Image (tube, rainbow, N blue to C red; front, side, top):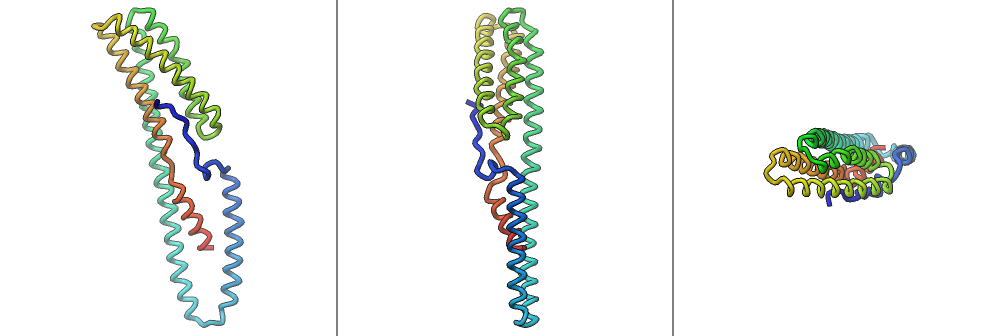
Length: 207
């Protein structure tokens, strides 16, 4: 189904504060090592400084490139998620309004289930990066509500196959569920771990 638990990589499972502290300590350590090596090799002559300058500029350039690449990935992913979530919200609003079109108890049941479905979707989106267990429960609840709503809509459609109002409701529900699947799929894409590892390596070498 579209609502499938998203597994975080090992890097994303580590708190950002711990990563920042480790990077700081390792950077200070490699800077100290570089200072000692540089002081030890200072007697080799002035040509050494020029060679080190070339290497340093190359490493700093690589670090800047990787940093820009990471920011570009992150900004693009954020904008994509924002657009898809806004689309889902609009589709849900349209579907909810159209539940009042058919004059049927089945449509009213769908209307009553809608607030629960929206709440489950919000819980799924907010819990994704914080609590995987809560996210799994929210996704299971979302899927259950989706199946209930779709079953009611199918019963309504079979009872009124030529009613345009029912067709409009069915189409809007389909659009809302598809938009929810797009949002879930977009959440799977993150900056590749290899980009962060290369960035950390460039920072350490620069130090």
